[in-house]
Image (cartoon, rainbow, N blue to C red; front, top):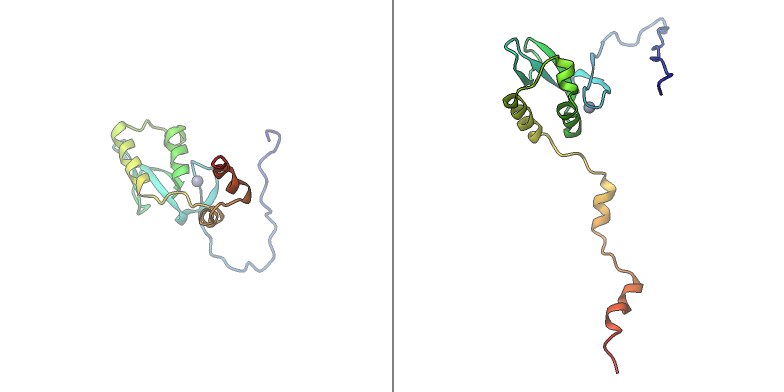
Length: 137
Ligand SMILES: [Zn+2]
């Protein structure tokens, strides 16, 4: 919705913060969701201008974060989000490197219901008489 402003997070907190530990959050450039940083994969634009996956999250350079999901990488790579965030153009070599990384990601998790359904043989009483009806007399 265009009319919706950014929702201000409630700043008023109870007096005793339960735990001061702060979990750093980053936004996935694919799905644009905020997630804990450790669940995301960092992509870095190196000082040399290369764009590569940074599994350690410690390389210097401008970084972008993506979920470890192929769909997010598809969005990031193919829709230009990643280039936009990194303010650079991804060279064909670097893109190939990123795509090689994407290939190592697990495929999208399938809904478990779909799997269970395939095991069940589809037999309907209606189709039983359909094929054999022609031979007779
Ligand atoms: Zn994502």
